[in-house]
Image 1 (tube, rainbow, N blue to C red):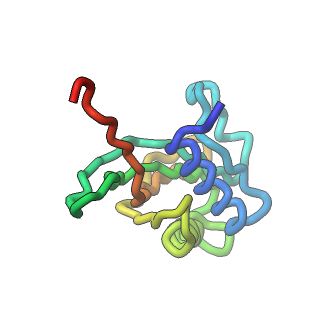
Image 2: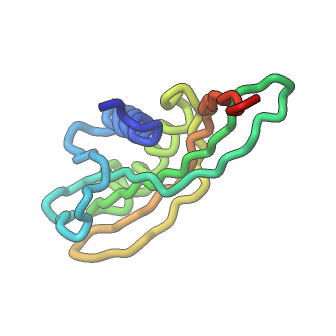
Amino acid sequence: MRKSFVENIEEAIIATLKSELDDDFFIAPYPDDPDGFDFTQYQKSVLVHYTGSQHAVNKAVGANSQSRQSGFAIHLAIRNLRGSAGSYGYIDRICSALQTNRIEGGQFFITSDALSNQTDGLWHWIIEGHHSGVQAAKIKPRLGA
């Protein structure tokens, strides 16, 4: 079965982060059962999920496409705040990696990063952004025309 537009972008984000972050990070899509995921089993983890899209019509004459800004959240859970193993530096590295690499043929724009909570010795951060790309929309002929 063919993967969705969203799954392809999500996989590209994950591949980019795996190539740019340390090997001891656990980096994966957010699990289908988020309540069953135990962040405490990892010293450093990054999980990615889709948050929704905004669509716009391409107004160019003869255009057969539509722009789509697909939102994603990158969840960083880490034990330290400062220094070489701290969240502050990793937030910068994650943002830089996503902003400076082509992601599935489009560009990724960071819109926010914020502390979500601190539990069980882990600092939980959410970095949000959107992938700006074009999704082709083939227009079908009208029936009976």
